Structure formats: C-alpha cells, structure tokens
Amino acid sequence: MARLTKTDIERQLLAGRPVPWRDASGKSFQIVLTDPRERRLFQFLLKQSVREPTDLPPTFISGLSATYLATGRSATPIVLDKQYIIIKKEIVASASLKHLVGSPVVAGDADENYYFKRLQMPSDDTVVLESLDIAGDYPPVVFRLSGEGPDRLHRVWPVVGVLFELPG
Image 1: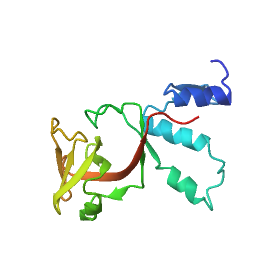
Image 2: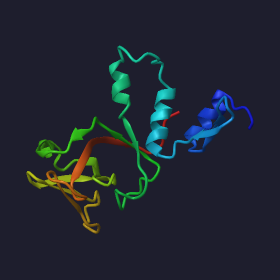
Image 3: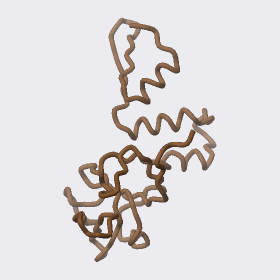
C-alpha cells in the first residue's frame, strides 16, 4: 500500500474514492465519502480556519448548511444536476411553513428522498411541492405534516439561490 500525502487523501475523499490504511496490527480499513453531502461538508471544513470546538463563529455555523449539491432532475424541467443550491437553515416541517408558500425549497420525506420544488400549503396539515415549471407538465408531490409514513414531510430548507458552479 503506497503512502498517501495529506493532499492525496483530501483529493481521494473529495472524489468519492476510498482511502485505505492498515492499523498497527496490519488489519486493513478504508474510508470513503460516498454521499455528496459528506463530500460537500468535508470540502467546507477543509477551507475553515476553525480548529477548536468552542467559541465557534456564526459564519462557521451558518456555513455548515449553506449549500446543497443537486443531483438528478428534481426541479424538472430545469436541469440542476451537479449544481449547488444555496439554502438557509433547516426549518421543522410544521404549519409554521406558511411563510414559505410560493417559495422554492429543498424538502425531504420519511424515506430520505429530497425535492427541489415550490412549496404550497392548501391546508394546515398538507404540503404540496410543485414543479418550478409553470406550464404544469410535471405532477406535484403531496405530503402530510402529521402522522407517520412515507407521505410525511420531515425536513425543509428555504432556497436562497443557485450556483451554477463553485467559485474559485
């Protein structure tokens, strides 16, 4: 097993490739960041100067949830695959979402499926996520705010904007 530099390890992890190592007894292990969210968080942390877990600056805390990598075509017909959605802090899925009616959000269901859609609330317990395309060619996704099951909305992040590529 070739010896990897710190830079090699960072590049491997950011690319989603495994980084192997052996412990003192010779047993093999590896770490891999398969989820884009893990890689995004790792990339953010690499760029920070914060090294102590106390007195964290507000910019560090807000940066932990500042971007979300879009994958797939959730915003159909707008293709956002591999583009970055700038989001605000997560909001608990409840009737308090009314201030987001008509706004784009990233929303997650009980099965950890995530959607980039426009939020509507026809009632206090129902959320409709509709396509960002105003032509109406793509069906909405309907969720409940109460109870359990796959049709329950669990997580919501208000969308601030979209980056078509990362700066720098």
